[in-house]
Amino acid sequence: DRYIEKKHVYNFVLHLVMFILALLTKESAVVLPFIFFLFIILIKKMPVKSKNNLIICFIWFLCLSFWFLLRNIFVNYYSGGFYSIVDLGRGLLSYIGKLVFPFDLSPYPIPENVNIYYGIAVLIILVLLALMQRIKDRKNFLFGLMLFLLFSLVTFKKGFTTPSFIETRIYPALFGFLIITAEIDYGKVLYKYRKIFIILITAFFSVITLTYTPVYKNPFTHLKFAVLASPESWVIRHNLGMEYLKSDMIDSSFYQFNRAWQINPENSNINAALGVVYDRMNLTDSALRYYQRSIKYNPKNLTAVNNIGLIYFESKNYDSSLKYFSQGISIDSSDAQIHFNLANTYFKLGDYERSKYFYLTSIRLDKQNIHAHRYLYYTYLELGYEDYNSIWKYFLGKILFLL
Image 1 (cartoon, one colour):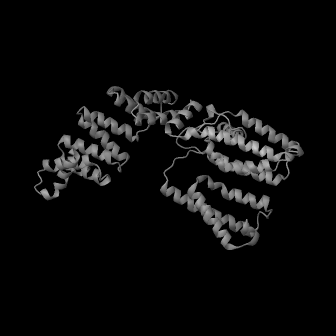
Image 2 (cartoon, one colour):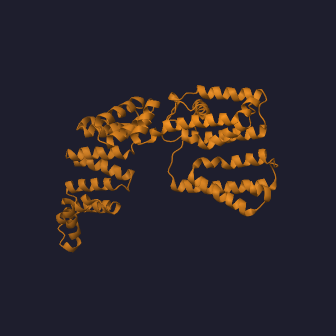
Image 3 (cartoon, helix red, strand yellow):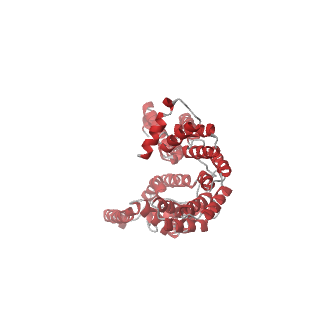
């Protein structure tokens, strides 16, 4: 704004620095150039094709290109476009409704469980106000509407999981909604008692915030409430099951994984999680069956591949375990544990040179793996190394392990 008014270059440089920092902080900042452009055209009323505007747009384009380049280098993130039109409509209505009527809140709302009726009610009110010519400045109203839509639509990009309308994503779009409401003429009565209404609204939203905040106390309260609010979400049930599994609450984790499986039986992660639970129950056949289902739907599921290898290793079927551990390394060559497991297999097969190689690789990837140091010592002994100066540290590792 200062650059547009006074044409001071340092203001524009500061603007660009803040814009780039915003991009590096939150991806939704990608829509900011479009919002800035609308601000220039609608609020500042500058000509669309002015030379200054074209230069500004070109510099924004360069900033976005730089950001996309960095993102592609450092972030391996799949995106399959945007949600369907039906899901998009549900999401917008749920966002609009919760901005005015903050009820039916959920940490992870999904299309099947959102309430769209509050949003429809708010939309009808806004349309009626527009038809009754209660809009004070149509350009400001349009700018607020576009700001709200742009910040909302950018949240509907597909990721790894099912569509979700997480309420915290709507915070940036809230500014657009506030501009919309500020441009509505509410009449003399509301204007006269505006301070009372502001106090009541503030108190109302404060109470909602205080009562909802305990949901985020810890992962269990957060996920349990999320399951209650969105019982059809396999993602939340899977995540809650993982929390139970970390706490060694096997029965509870099995229940959540099983419910998640009923919703999405072809999900690789859910099948792998059920395999882990059956493994913990010592039901090896059932565990193996679910691990196999997991890699059927995703051959690169490292948890399933590694655990199948471990099952075969424990049953002394070393040829089969070798196959799966080798497959695991092809999936993720930076995983220290899979190298360690493969080294153990080669050790059991009597191939001590390869065993040594993979123990050393595991140690290189995880220097704190005392088990790898211990078994590398045994490998050196099997190889008949006479240079005890080179293996004394592995013997020390063994002592530390025993302690």
